[in-house]
Image (cartoon, rainbow, N blue to C red; front, side, top):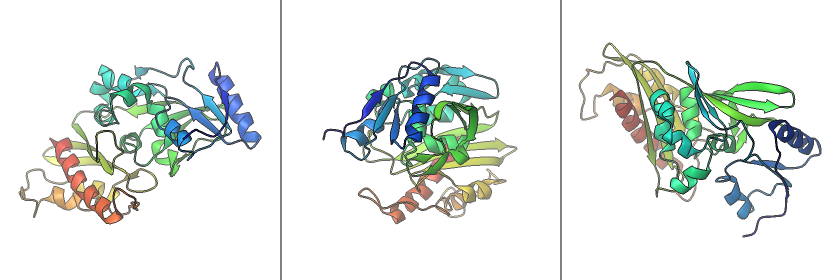
Length: 294
């Protein structure tokens, strides 16, 4: 299908991009931002999105790169998934981001798609929003009024909707560096290697003195936005890792992870019904937590 007609703008600077977006919003135009295009272009072709203006940020300077800043790693919004995967800094300092990025679509998509684009698109079936939520990432946005930081917990508002305001551009992501004792894993169930996740689980678990000291669990495609499995996180705190129960019947880890679907509202579509997604969330959370514990 051919996309609906739209005005195409390719700003030369971030300031110009913010001005164009702000003017379009003030005039009531439906404006979309193009980064790598791997999520937006299919929507345009299917006419599921038909903006009046398309603002292409792909060649803006200064929005790409990975910088280790001590307590966090700053990733520019236009950094591609492939660049994330190839980064020794990410593998060493933010391994959960690397694990999840490796499951995104296929190499062709990863060479074009960007971290910022994935987060700003805010598809609940996307892998990286749940990772940002679990790690407590902070997203940095820029507008004509200056810069502001948005915690991941506040960034995802609804299906394909974020807290970015009119005239704001996502410029980068602060990925917290978690200290010693943390283990990570991303578990995903999908029909094919290129498909969206039916359910995904991002797990970060901190061990200490034979117990689980802290757990952070982000769920993919279990609602209109990525969600934290708060009931699991609470139930895992203080669990004795030497407890018996390898068959899963009396295993405190299994019992905790059986609460993964609490507070979620999974959708029903051609790929899965809500009860199946709830089942997957429980199973995949148990797998992800066990792998993160090591």
